[in-house]
Length: 374
Image: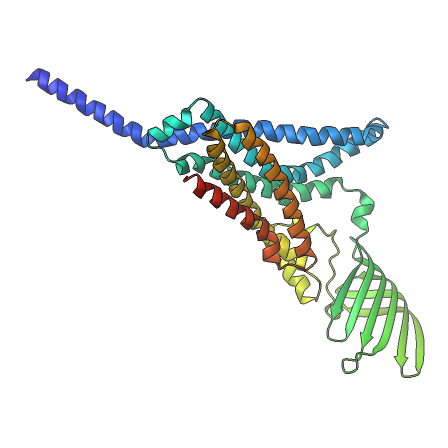
């Protein structure tokens, strides 16, 4: 009786151990695949960045060795360029790292063993998809928070003080051109054009040499008013003219930042504000959609890499899949830039400009996955 009881307990223990292992095995496999992917991702990303930085060093050798200030300026410019470099190479790096990781597993027949044990393809690719999302979120944080801070700290003083000219619509009959703005709430070379709402004929042009904002009121100096009437024109000059801030169009007196680096919520509000003022905001809406499509593109790259590694890994031609992935990565970058340029100029709808390239490659990924029955 004692032997039967011991044998029964031993069998139960084995069964429990098998059940526990069956439930923990997917987690162990996912962690193993993730570690392989991260190893290749880190190596490839470092290699890409180093190649670009070395080329940048050789292009600026004269500035680097000129003096200490030139060397520091080169370091600052390099650090400012690094986030954009990372954003460009991350998609192709994910593609190559996925192929390299599964190619390594194929080489030791681990993939075959995993499939034989009941581990499906989606279980293998899931950790890489999650890591791709985390990489995209990290890139978002660097682009929209670290880069603006670095620009504010390192940008030359004259660049912060001098801002590009802009046009502003005021009401239904006025248009302002602001030639120069400074961070001290000052404007220079301002021109007002006012026309008749009925005939659209120009009625008045006012030239302001300079203006300053104080106590919710703009005070302009050296003002020249030109009034146009049928067959005549009158000119009136004055030393100063005051306009209430509420009657003057809104003007951003801080250094404007490339919409690519604006956080999602700030970009949305800025696009709405500029749209209400009648400005061209196509680029802003393209950038808004691009912030979502970029994360999808990283997932698509991982799926394509998995499909290529599975297809070529069965034939032992991982090198072929790596070469093909390089070609696809270059093609992805070229098409993406073309789509974004067409959207920024208004030739494509903003959503199509931002999502078109990702949707094309998503279709390719689904085609490859279906062909390999993954």
